[in-house]
Image (cartoon, rainbow, N blue to C red; front, side, top):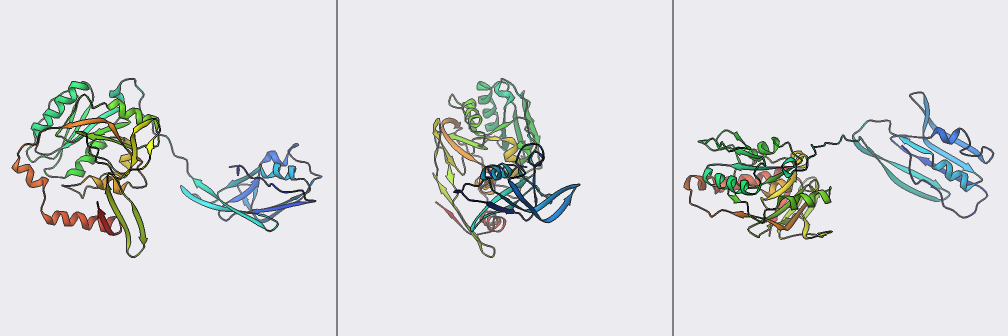
Length: 370
């Protein structure tokens, strides 16, 4: 590849001499610079190559020294310098040292294997772009209400249900894919299963006791994601509450680990053209996400009962997240369910295990909530 932007800017000299050297790769001049009329030989008086390497029959070097009487001709040559990595790595780098008289500049070169794009089918209908996903456990009454409300606004949209109820009940609604799991397999395991079956570009995550309303405009969330391709997750609000948070993280040393602070209502800058959307680190259980991005982070299946923030903790620095206040979903009235409550509110020992997992997996010495 060409080392773009390479040039010398200097006051008038009788001669100009520069040297470049790298460590991992090799430098060369493209053919255009040594054939034809790309430079004037009479002005280019010295072209010295140090530590000569032979790579696939082409002479290449890890150092180049150039000296000429013309700054213009020197910059023509610098514009033809190419870098080639000699060691295969999918993501690494090298440092280029550029020397002129007593001045030194050091700049990095990123060595990265290009990735293949992952494209999804293009369609004009919202159903071609979004799949709704949920996890249910012993709450079929609430699930049926959720489905009914979804169909009121999105008649043909696919709903994927991961179900780990101990006594499963068959859901026969159109455009509903129900996946039966072993009983009590867990909250995050169910999320993983549901997302793994999504074939659209985006999925909308909802809880099984949510309620679609006039304010549940999936298209509005898609609009934000399409406008900001770097975004991976966009959360909405549940009954008007966004429940977003930030995750300030202080890296620690190798021995003791770092400190993580889960800060409720912590947010960053607003998103241009979307004044009710802000950058955050985590959002509520109602969010639109890029399927491939969340699949790379995944939900830790060790977390079986109470978990949500952990996805965003594991994805910190990987997932780009925003929260928007102009799209909302409702919540069904809470009803008594003693059997469900036993699992929804686990014993203290389960909560202690969750903390231990945090400290070990994320190499932390402290976690703060506030």
